[in-house]
Amino acid sequence: MLDMMLMNAYISWNVAARDYPRCELPRLSRHDFYWHIAQRMLNCTSQSSCQQSPQKRQSNAAIAGGHKPERTSSKTICAVCKLDWNIVRKKLGKEPPQAGLTRDVARCQACGITAHSLPCTTQRTTHSLAEFEGLTCFEIAHASKGFGIWVRSDDDVLPNAAGKKRSYGLKTAHPTYLELAAKIGAAPKRRGGSVSNATTTRQDNHGLSSSSDSDDEDSRPQPLRLANAQAFHNNDN
Image 1 (cartoon, rainbow, N blue to C red):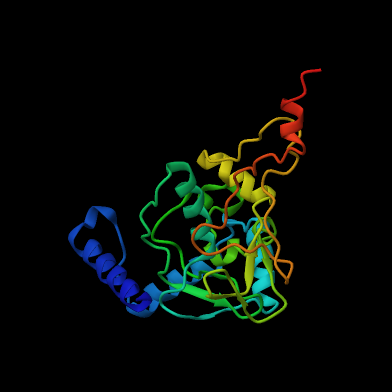
Image 2 (cartoon, rainbow, N blue to C red; image 1 turned 120 degrees about the vertical axis):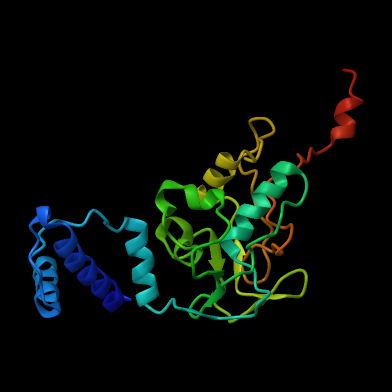
């Protein structure tokens, strides 16, 4: 591609030098034209404006440290997109389109998280968070702001409620999860001032939340459990 681009530029230069004499362009040989382009590139001193964000650098460090993507089943779901999808489902009260949940999904060799290793074809609210702009789902899952959303298991795989194998669990009380839920408009509602943790998840034997891939990532507050409620209502004194 580079050779074709240079050749087309070289031909265009000499055509312009021949057909537009008022431009006063010299006719160049291929060697001289390529040499001139190479010198301009080597002597370019302008600084690049593309600087990596702290989250990008952190995810790159994690990948360099062994968190590398590997191929997995074609039906594997991206944990990052599914998290976004679940919050939207809670807001709408019905299932949104599932487009893009399984395309180009990879599994991390180190922690087992599954996420898109290439840019998503379906842009979600997660990708619009300032710290995650320009990052793939795999990088989001390994950035400092996103890594803690999922609790990784020390075991290779952990069966969920549906019997499927997974090696991570969701933390719906994580600040990034709550920020995303608030931006989508599905933040958990608190009931009274005594509810201190409306997003507590159930724990299994591995210390991970027992969430399934479909509907266990529920951040709605649990109902209050009042002791001796009947006796209180019958007390006329």
